[in-house]
Image (cartoon, rainbow, N blue to C red; front, side, top):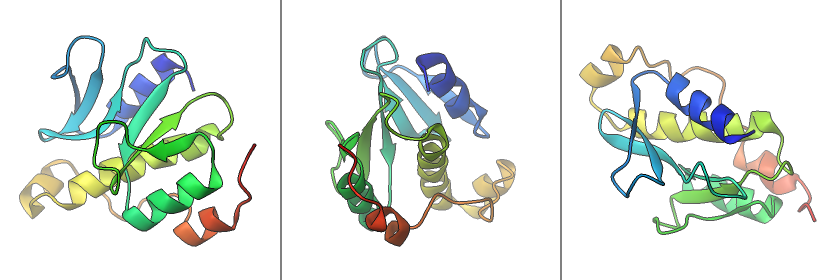
Length: 137
């Protein structure tokens, strides 16, 4: 996934806006004022930080060298993912969707309804499946 694809995928999530609260070099993708993804789209290698359930965050870190604790974020709840081609693009998309879903799930029912949020959409692989995968070199 390249920077344009990352940006497009984030903005495709319902109600998402791109903001620059940390300066023009850091794109922050928010839904209803809450961030779910952060990336310096011009930096190489390209990276994106996404929110994640703590157990799944640990499983991803243990399974993929491209996933590490969130940079300048709560390391229990955020992962920074290096988009160097070592992860399947669909997994990266799933991580972004899951981050969005985690943020939206904590919002009021009124906001969720306004976003037409569907918590039943396909979710990323389980922590168990991620932890069973061998660590990539």
